[in-house]
Amino acid sequence: MLLARAEAAQRGWTAEDPVALYAQGIRAAWDLWTPKGSDAASQAEAANFGNAQYTAYLANTDITLSSGDPLTKICQQEWVTHYPNGVRGWTLWRRTGVPALVGGPAAVTANKAIPRRFAYGPNEYSTNSANVAPVATQYTVAGDADSQLARMWWDAQ
Image (cartoon, helix red, strand yellow):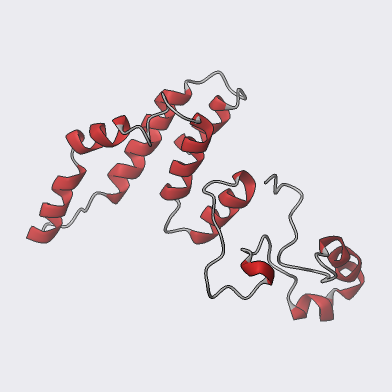
């Protein structure tokens, strides 16, 4: 939530301090990912997540908001934070275009593109065809109605 607030502040939607929220958001994610186990391996790994490492990470020119495009960096960190929640990360990517992703070599879509939406399932067509059929045509890409490559209304990329 802190990184979402940092994005809103950076866009001028709130009067909050985007730099402070960004640092707090990264810290919250940092603390979340710090190993918590009591075994020796967890404790050794937890040492990599100390204050000195956090400070060095935040000062890195690829991370700090004082250089480059702050909005891109905020969105990148938000995407990284959502790593274990793939759908949330995918939604953030579709909304912002950050990070700059491309389909992998095994992608099965046209031009190996990353899908932009879920197509309606077969049950939807059989139980709600009167409503789905006309809407599905709004998501036509390259002659394919109800295409996964069509953009949602909020997909601003």
